[in-house]
Length: 288
Figure 1 (cartoon, rainbow, N blue to C red):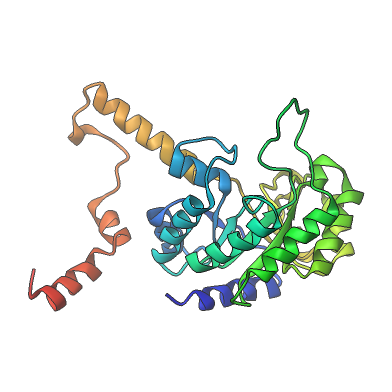
Figure 2: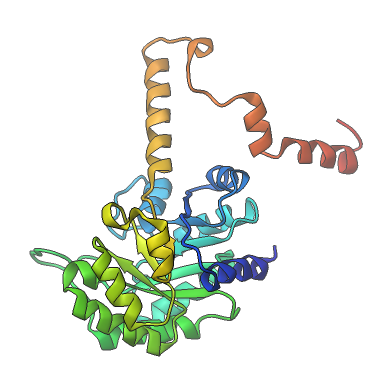
């Protein structure tokens, strides 16, 4: 697999002038669908990884090896450049370095490391906390040290907008920029003024998580150096709903021939690359 070529395509996006919506993907088939529909990049979130692999909520119970394995399955399914949410790097700065090593080997094009205190510590909490800026910088530097392919994009992610306000978000964005990250991921952005302030304070491209409302205008975002803006993770929710309805119908006695909303055999053949396997069967096994 030519992972570097995908990373180069992702960097072209960062160096361009357009803000893109990535396809939220969670397995090989969803990645194939996204690529066939023309999405330029895919996104695997930590929350979606936890639900897809473990059937568990987003409480940081998924391990690095499990997450990297799912990322690899998505990457090998096609040529879609994949951005992944690597949460807190699965531990301290040394763990963050190891996280980058594993995800780079899995083939991802870009990853984010965040500065939220994760997993949840013991005791009552009103809201999540943030690492100190010094510890956050240490994680970013360690993550960059774990990178072997210089084309791999490492983004510093901060939840400071939601947890501590605009001044703290800008301070962290500047600190992570100085540490050498390739982009800044802003979680919790709600208002245009926030994006204008951060984009004026740093030179790096920006990523946004789940932005809507005031931040739905791609022209506005593009002009403020936002290059990736997520739209949530509706495909996974849609897949869960479809499987639930289908299994419930079967359990309730509906005959398979009467089910609605099933993929056609033509679509399944296209997504599973059936024609390629037919050709390989002829070439390597001596016939059909």
